[in-house]
Length: 241
Image 1 (cartoon, rainbow, N blue to C red):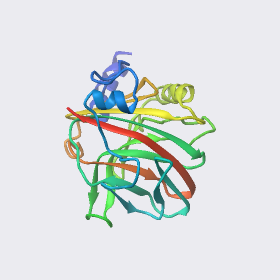
Image 2 (image 1 turned 90 degrees about the vertical axis):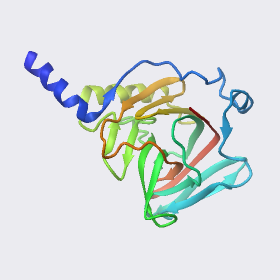
Image 3 (image 1 turned 60 degrees about the vertical axis):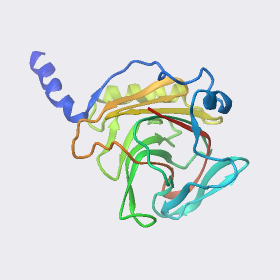
Image 4 (image 1 turned 90 degrees about the horizontal axis):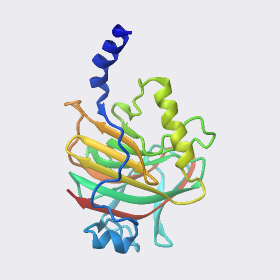
């Protein structure tokens, strides 16, 4: 047993330090509504009318404004497609809502994203807050942290014990809303990354990889490559820390 514990302690830093308290970050209003967020010092990333301040990059998916929401959609989508902000962000609290219209699609929200090769051709990489599509319940990783086009799953880590991955899925299945809006909160302070889904803590990850730790980048919404996708986002607000 002592040997096993020692081994786990030795390999854990390679996955990043992680913590598990469940409180929402300080500074968020009790209700994540536009008026309350603006009163608390948050700024909207989306004007509700057009995609000013955003640019599509990557694959063949499409984005439009529909009913005051951002819609990402497509059929026979080639490559991952992103709608990225022109502006970049460092330390922040970011809150938004999303829901699947097409439950077969996969999606996510990049934060501190990077683009190798420049706009519009460059490949998007960096941290992604997953919007999972596995309705079967075999995996429910929404609000997990994925490192797009770099290291893969960071939280839960791809090499985490199976019971830890299953615990994350069980929580995701319990709190995710397939037929309604889901609220995501992301907090980044230095190399400490945290996420919440519908009020519950999901990921708490400290990136100790000096090669890949990213301290500033853009936000982006994803339409994953595949047969189809239709996702909506609204109420996208951030506050610099």
